[in-house]
Length: 198
Image (tube, rainbow, N blue to C red):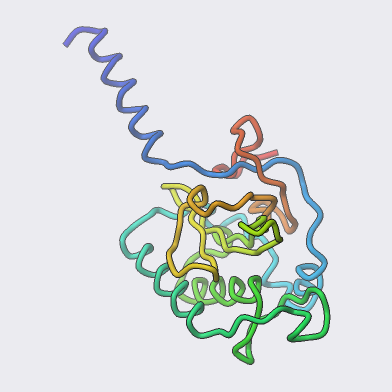
């Protein structure tokens, strides 16, 4: 095989591997945490600590897809949606829905706990804030995979790639340290695919 053919073949294989990785969101600068998250973390510090020894990106498999779908569906069907104001009499409270009721972040906290109990690393499971289709703040759970970022959401039983949700992604928990980071679509920001981030 000629040198040009080898170069062309190598370029094609690299492009195929890059396409198979799937699109993902990128981190930008540090973001202020939500008040409800800060309060939740003060009572549940183990929920908010980042263990950098854990995997940040999960290999996407049929087993993982089935687990994510099962957990998303079971939590969505088990809980009764209620705002924090109607439930607790306050604007924002992050908590596990132990009484069978909760709002968006409570759904996602329970999903994350169930996925951790199934053996997934918490570092790959990031609480995320979006602006939804109604222009309102909403919380989803991002699962970081080698095929892109997947979203578990109480508004749909389907696990979706982030770009198929029609949400505007604002910020999520950092996978590098306890705290939050703004999100961007620009890879010129710091990629959320690496532990060697700024």
